[in-house]
Image (tube, rainbow, N blue to C red; front, side, top):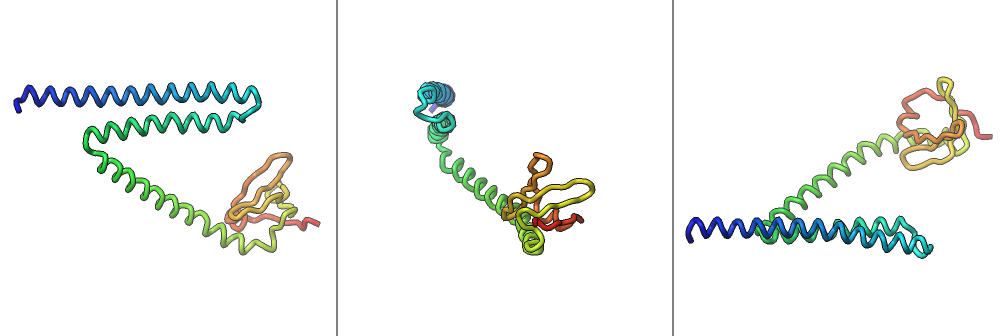
Length: 169
C-alpha cells in the first residue's frame, strides 16, 4: 500500500469518527429536548411528575453519548482497552470511596456508642451560648433544631467538644 493510500484511509477513518461523534452529540441533544417536551406536556396534564421526566431525559441523552463513544472506540479497535481502563478506574474510585466512608464512619460509630445514653431524642444541648434540641438520631450524626434552623452534627464532634446536655423531661 502506498503512502498516499494509507493517508487517505486514515483521513476517511478520522472523518467517519468525527461524523459519528457529532451525530451522537446531536442525537443526544435532540432526544433530550423531545423527551423533555413530552414530559412537560404530560406534567401539565398532571399525568407524570416532572422529576421523572428530567431523569429520563438525562438518561436518554447520555445513552446516545455512550453509544457514540462505543461506536468510535470500536471503529478504532480500542474498545477493549478503553473499557478495561474505565473499569479499573471505576474499581479504584469505589475502593477509595469505601475507605473514606469507613474513615468517617468508624469514629462516629464509636462516639455514638459512647454517647448513646446521654443523647436521646428531645435532649437539649447547650454550648457557648448556642442551644438546640435533638430531633433525629441517625447512624453517624444527630439533627439538632435551634431557633428554627436544623443542624446535622456528627457524633465524633459532640464527643470531642464540651456541651451541656439537659434531660428531655
